[in-house]
Structures are given as structure tokens and as C-alpha cells.
Length: 425
Ligand code: ADP
Image 1: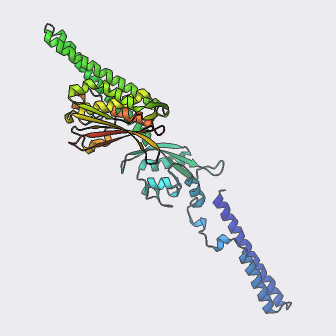
Image 2: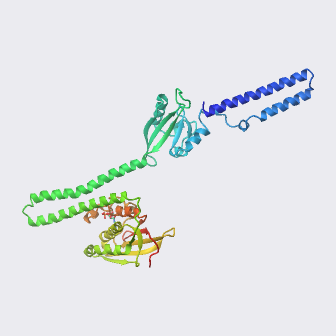
Image 3: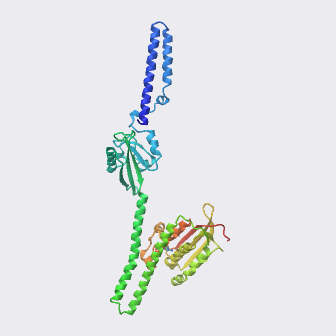
């Protein structure tokens, strides 16, 4: 017997007891009045007092007019609702006809049309779900199916339909629990992994195809052409260099991701790091006709990983030299600031005066293999992974990257890192 049935039986017996007391009182007082042992007035008063006492001892819930559970579907109501409310996934309890007995807030956000005592098919229009409920009742076995939604966003769920029997050894389930496990994050990771492998193979295949094409040419038509051979070998070297760089970036990305949860803590001064990177890129700067100015405090100490921070500024300054070369000038400013919560923060801004970046590209620039202009990136020896690396390194340092740009007026890439302490200005 379940909780509701128990309560119903108890209330019925209480009501029967009340009727018995009133009937007995009326017989006793009527008898006494008839045989003359009691005046009619006293008999009526005694009868009224006993009836009133019996009525007042009836449980308060009956008097308050609480809905009788008999009128509701068998398991609807508070106990089941309270039970599912505490569960961390969308859960719906259904009777054998597929009518809703109970559901929690997560289920309501998933299917806003859910209503108690109405068929679940009005809120979840998916015949497979209803069939699974039917099977769970018929076989008494748990059912698992996949359920997906397209609107307003793509979402995937695994739905587990569990038949529930109250009484041990009961022949048939009394209701079913339908639980939804959100598979969307897992699906997205799978999609991202597949995209990543497809992009990486495509990036590697392009220089590989160029290399094997030139090898064929050198063994064939250009076999005796010394000038063509030199030209082709130079291109082959460039392509091999690009492949090596791509593999290097891929390995760095996976290493940084593996260590993402460990925040580096060695004290690192950003000023010599930036100067070292600028020195290393002097050749490229001269080649592109760009002058680089660095404005720095005496020291800017952050807890960090020296080599990873070199990688961050190499990528940003090299990009400014490559994509912003038309502006002829790159400015790098290092300052100590305070973050929104008042803690000390180091800021390094790399500003170029080139063509800039259209606003629609800004949010996607740190995605792996995202480029504004793929041909230009390739021509510049880019891998499309530089800013993704920057983002991951900064995440590991609990820092952030901000990108500001107005097309035609250049771009500013600013790195913010939590600073160790107030550094000497
Ligand atoms: P890549 O290897 O292609 O340089 P990145 O991840 O470093 O890859 O940069 C992604 C894209 O962002 C580049 O291909 C380029 O289109 C754009 N970009 C980066 N820096 C700048 C900049 N300073 N000015 C204009 N575009 C830039």
C-alpha cells in the first residue's frame, strides 16, 4: 500500500467512527427521553454536545477542505512532486496512460507545456518517448532512447524510462519515471574534436601536396633546369617549415591544455620578455618596413611560465608586424593597473596601425584555425593556431586577452595578467 492509499483508508475509518458516535448518541438520548429518565430539552442538549465534540475531533485537514486524493490520478500530488523536485535532471512521472503525475523545474524548462494530469504527448511531441513508456509498463523493464531538440538550440538527451512498483512482487508497474540526461556538451566536444582533426589534416595536407608536386617536377621536366630547381627548393623549404610550425603549435596546444588546471607560479618579469621578443623579430620588422616602440615600467612581475609568456608575445607582435605592416609602426605599452575587483594587474598592449579587423571576426579570432583571410595567413606562414595558443596560455595564467579594432585604424591586442604585487614604477 502506498502513502496516499494509506491516508485514504485512515480518513475513511475516521469518518465511519464519527457517524457511529453520532448515531449512538441519538439512540441513547432518544431512549432516555422516551422512558422519561430525561427531559426532552436535556436529551437534545446532550445529543448536540456529543455530536459537536465528535465533529471537532475530526482531523484538521478534512475541515480545511484539502482535495481528496481519490479525485486525483492515483499518484499525483505533493509526495511525488517533492521527490522529483530534488533531482538534478529533468524528471517526469507518468501513469500507465501517459498522463503526467509529477515533474520538476528542469522538466518544465525543457517542456513548458507540461501540466499535471494531462497526456505528456501534449508537451513532448515525440512518438518514440510515448512508445518507450508503453514498453516500460508492458515489460516492466527500463528503456533508454535518444531525444533531440532543434529549436531554439540543438540539444541532445538520453531519456531513461524506469518503471516503478510500490509493492514488492506487484504484477505491474504503478508509474514510470522519465529522466533526461543532457548529452549536448558531450556531443559538442565530439563535433569539435572531429572538426579539429579535419582542419589539422587539411592544414598538413596542403604543404605536403606542394612538396610532392615539386618533387615530381624536379625529377621530371625541371631535372636539368638549375634556376627552376633553386626556386622550387626554396618553396619546398618554406612548406616544410610551415609543416614543422604547425606540428609545433599543435603539440604546444595539447601540452597547455593538459596543464590547464595548474596555474604557473614562478615570478616572471614581463619587461625583459617583451624586449627579448622584439629583438628576435627585428629582422621581420625591417623586412616589412615597420618600427617597433616599447614603453615600459622598470619591472612588471607576474606569476607565470617564462617560455609560455614568450610564446604569447611572439604571436601578438609577429601578427602586428605581418598583418599590420601597412601602418609602418607598432607600439607596445606595459603598465601596471588594477582589475575591476581592485587587485593588481599587469597589462601589455600591442597596437598596430594596419587595416584592422572587421567587428564580425573579433569574437572568433581565438578559435583554432580561424582566419580573417586564409590565403593571406598562409602566405604569411601562419597556422591559424597562434591566437588559440595565446588564449589557452592566458587561461592557464588566469589572465585574459582583449581585442579592439576599427577597420582602417589598426588593432590593439591587450594581455591582462594578475600581477604578483605592486611592482616598482
Ligand atoms: P595565423 O597563424 O593565421 O596568424 P592567428 O591565430 O595568429 O593565426 O591569427 C588569426 C587571424 O587573425 C589571422 O589569420 C589574421 O586574419 C587575424 N589577425 C591577427 N592579428 C591581426 C592583426 N594585428 N591585424 C589584423 N588581423 C589580424
